Image (cartoon, rainbow, N blue to C red; front, side, top):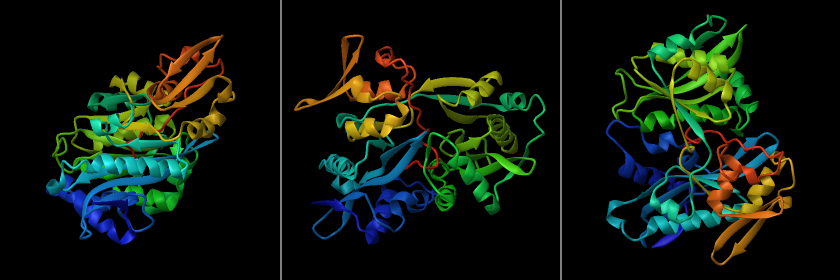
Length: 376
């Protein structure tokens, strides 16, 4: 068995294998839903090939730059991990994961996000991270979101001419993935979350005085109250004025025969969260979507340094040893030793038990929700 990077002309094989493993009747091809992995170009993904050149296992790997204030994080995402049924039990996924992790280190990445949390990833050092509030809206909440009168926004389906307006909203957001208008259109057209939940994606805009002030991309059922998979409608990506976003969420519930709309709200979006709570939405909190692996701790802290207010070397020491990485935090003459999970908690979770050890000016680093348009 040969493990190597895929060439551009082999990406269709990878899409076909993913369809074989994950596809459901009536579901679009993974090749359409995940362009970052399967569209022709320079691939970062790895595969396992037989001596005859047949692709029998695949691990998709896609690079991105995550913008958080003045910081730029070089990150990868892993998804569409699959093995042909005839070749399972040979540890091919573990071997591919090791190759992808090594690739990320060589590339200068700080983090690798994984669209899953199964034991394969956790054994390799992937952990939960961040904090997201999951709000569940119903028709009663939608009515409450429309009070007081919100007619100052005109709501309409997205048109191609809206591209620059939506792109400007995303470009001004933080945290967010760096992307231009062309990539935005590709992601909106691929509709990954809607495809895998057997729904369709609808994108609405809100205008005030003729200018786009907010947008919402949502996965909604085609005709019935929930998707064939039984999942509720989902808010996939949004941006702009919080009250306008809330208006778009209410509009989505009113336009479609759905009982519930799930809205994942990252912890830092307090204005939107407050509006949803005031409308009576049921809210649960949990980690961000998937898991994450620290590719290189020094790169992570250096790339995050514009957000830390103080030089990270002044309060944290990285200790690389044969048994694994550890981090020593010094505060008021005392020391706290953390593993990768602890460092991720300190940096990205506003409810971390380790925050008492952080410098006085330290602020939790916000991350975007990882199952939005950029999900793979």
